[in-house]
Structure formats: structure tokens, C-alpha cells
Image (cartoon, rainbow, N blue to C red; front, side):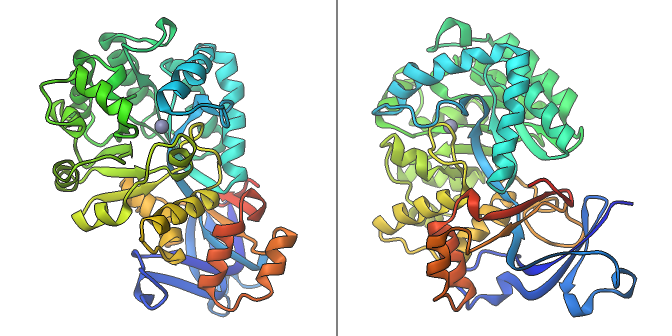
Length: 429
Ligand SMILES: [Zn+2]
């Protein structure tokens, strides 16, 4: 039996707290114990209440650090790990100049395998234990990523992008090959290890109407699979999409007309959406994915969290590497906070940490598996150190509450603040 006993300060969420007074939405234990058995959390509670059978056994003491569920990144591009920080003014320039060139390299299975290992190393180092990833157009890119995730027993969701127009020839599939490859991935990887496959039309601009129809058909054929794509990131992009789909009311309607607007849909960005689109997103149960560092870097615009929330739209938050500039969900929460603050939306750090853990697990309908420290869930968690750098340690001398600690972690922290990452109960960092 694989048994690990962990001691430390524990924080886990059961709901979305607007602030520290909503104590029914989170659990905090100052001196807590986590017992991991065969990859799952077998017991959690105060150290002094540790069940008799675990007393006296070896344990790992992470005090005074804070243990939280592993971060979940709901939108990241595997073949873009080496285009982060490419100098471009806007989305379409960035895609055409760098990204569509780089992604061509992922037709090579050996390169994809080597990069998959480096990609997962970065996620683990930054405390991200689950991600929803776009591959390249090549099926081998997804086989490589999911193969490496299976080896490490990580919960990973990935899809090969389907794209059959408006990109270099070497990055185009066809409606039929896009369907065949995606279906083969779904049949090979769903439920293997902790892997899953997402149906992934890149975005309406790079898919023909036939490919959009086939994406909808795949969603009906595999009703439990996530569908991921992009929506309303940039004004030029929106204009180009509307020129291709003149029969649609707006960008959201493009996805709706082909059957892609459902509660399994993750829409990256969702920045420039009308009242009508916002209402349809809410009614469908689709998820809008906020990618703050990417939105700032590419000058895309400001995701209005409060407006979408008021309408009832579900949220996720993500790095969007390589349009995003940091692998760190802490950096992502920080930049997200700043964007919302500019819009006049105050966002409490307890809410931010909820979003990066249970909130994102709910967005992918996997809250029974990951996103909390609840008994019976998969033992993916991280250890955060608010004294990780000299500047953080200096600041931390004046911290008095959990909320202050979370806010300093989010404002000043990055991978250096991730003291340890556990995957299925085993220390991976
Ligand atoms: Zn993206």
C-alpha cells in the first residue's frame, strides 16, 4: 500500500467565498493532517484527531507552510511552451509570426515526446497538477502529452486542435482527418490513467463550416468530453469570424449554430461579448475562461468578471501559455486581480484561491476528483511558502491573517513559493 501522512496548515474550499466571513465556504486547519492512501485522500483533519492506526507512523512535516489543493489551469497550449514572450502587437500578428510557425515542429513524435516531459515539469514546478491543454494539429502531439501524463499519473485533459483553413498548409487537417484523429484519441485515452481528451476546434476562424459541424457531431457522440476553443478575444478576430459566418448573429452564435454551446464548453477569453451573447452563455452553462496575462500581453482587452457573473456565466481562470506570460497560477491570479480592480471589481484573495482550485475543477465538471482536499478525492496538493523570497519574507513579517497571507502569495509569489507539489499522494517537486 502506498501511504503518506502529511502535516501542515490546510486550506480547502467547499464554495466560493466572497470574503473571510463566509466560513461555510472554506475549511482552514492550523495544525492539520492529510493521509494519502493509494493516490487518494483517505483522511483529513486536525493533527490531534489523527486516527489511532496512523499515529506513530512516519510523516512529512510541512509546517509552517500552507497546503492547498493543486492548481488547475483551464486553458494552456502545449506546443507554445517555447513561444512565451514573443514580441507582437496583437493576437493575429502573434499567431501568424510565431505560433503557427512553431506548432509545425510538433508533427515530429520524438520532439513532441521530449517537449511533453518539459511541459509537465513546468506545470509541476509551478504547482499546477491538472491542465486542460490544446495540442498542435498533429495527433502525435496529444499522444505524447497524454503518454507523459499517464507515466506521471497526472490528471490531464488534452485535445489535438482541429483547423482546416486560414493557417499554413502544414498545420491544416481536413474535416475528416480532424474527426478521425480526435475520435481515435478519445477512444485511446479516455479513462486511461487519469487522462481525458477534449474536442478542440481551435477557433471559428480556422475551421470550415464542415469542420464546425463535425465538432458538434463529436460532442454528441462523446457527451462527457470537454470541448475547448476560443471566443471573442480580439476585435480583428471577431470581424474576420463574422465575415466567414455572415448567417450567424454574433461570434457566440457561430458556436451555438454548430452545437458547441453546451455546459461542456470552455471558451478561452470571452472578452468582447454583447448582452445577448452573455445571456446565451449563461443559459447554456458554458464556461468563460479568463486568461489575464495573455489578455494584457496581447492587448486583447479586459474580461469583465462582474458583468459575466451577474448574468450567471460560469468562470474559469487560466495561464494561456504561450500568449500568456507566466506558467504560475499565482501570477495569473495577481494579474487577474489587477484587471478586475481597474474595472472597479474588488476580488478577495479567498475567492481567487477558490477559483484556481475548486472553481476550476467545477468548470471542468471534475470536482469529485480534484480541486479540494476532501476525503476520497485524488491526492493532488501543493505546499505554499509565503517566505519564499527575501522580499516576501520581509513582507510576511507583518502578516496577521490567512487572507493577508493568501494575498501576499498571489501578489508576490511564483514557482519559488511552491515548496512542494504532490501528485496522487507522491511528492513530484
Ligand atoms: Zn489560447
